[in-house]
Image (cartoon, rainbow over all chains, first blue to last red; front, side, top):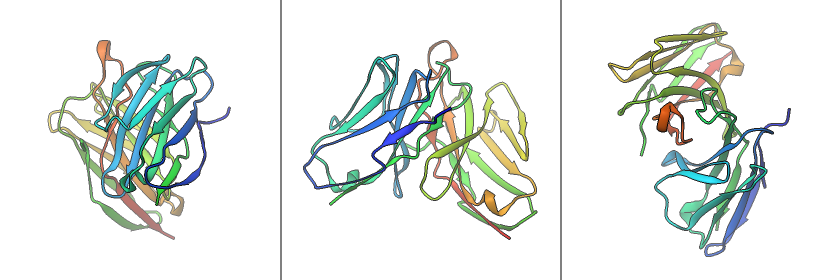
Amino acid sequence: KAGVTQTPRYLIKTRGQQVTLSCSPISGHRSVSWYQQTPGQGLQFLFEYFSETQRNKGNFPGRFSGRQFSNSRSEMNVSTLELGDSALYLCASSFRQDAYGGYTFGSGTRLTVV
Amino acid sequence: SQQGEEDPQALSIQEGENATMNCSYKTSINNLQWYRQNSGRGLVHLILIRSNEREKHSGRLRVTLDTSKKSSSLLITASRAADTASYFCATDAGGNYGGSQGNLIFGKGTKLSVKP
């Protein structure tokens, strides 16, 4: 059974550009969450989608957005990149709406903004 | 904002010893989860304990939860070099009808080093 797949694994962008990250959850998983991990702030929740609906959003500026498609694949977009957006972006999926089984994380996309 | 705070921040032990990590949190929770992360890679789910449970076991892992003290501990018995990783606790406040809304709140983690 394939795990959560995130593409690309590494990305280097210039300040001011925009970027789109992709996440393919485990087949059958309808909940997809996104997290940002930095050395200073740790792991922070970005947003969560369930059946194409954003159910919850973290405390991030509007430059961060996401969406989920009918096949549960999800994308997140960051516009007008800033140096502080350099981070490991992690996607997680879950089968159950209540997530009592925990979440399965992808290996992440490491974004470097120069 | 961080909800869970792990203690200690770093722990170094010899192979075969037990490792205990603690986590404190601030608000009511639906469940608490522990994850492992190797060298900046993805997180691996270890164990989930619900708010109405007090103790749970999984292989060499033992987790306790004290909701009155808003704290949890993770015990790894007979540790191995392969257990070297960062360990995070994450709380799930839950959504409507006890469900989750995907917004786990993570602590800063405990960096465990197991020396052969």
